[in-house]
Image (cartoon, rainbow, N blue to C red; front, side):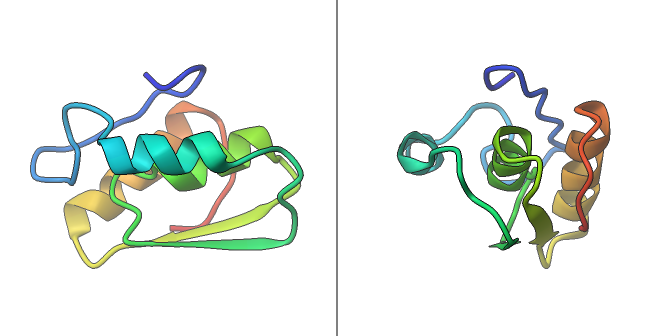
Length: 87
């Protein structure tokens, strides 16, 4: 869980068991008002992209990762939180 978000992470995906310090720091700098298109490269479980979409429903979020387990995790994170986005 991250606030109101449920994060789904399969084994082997970066930061699978807990939020890493770097992502936590980055999230603390984001605020509402992000609009337009957002690209989350190396999305892992989709923490950043999902956080942005939840906080900014008007944003068009696309997430991408080279790791198939990460892609599946990000898709599930979006679905679990009833968020729209491309992975």
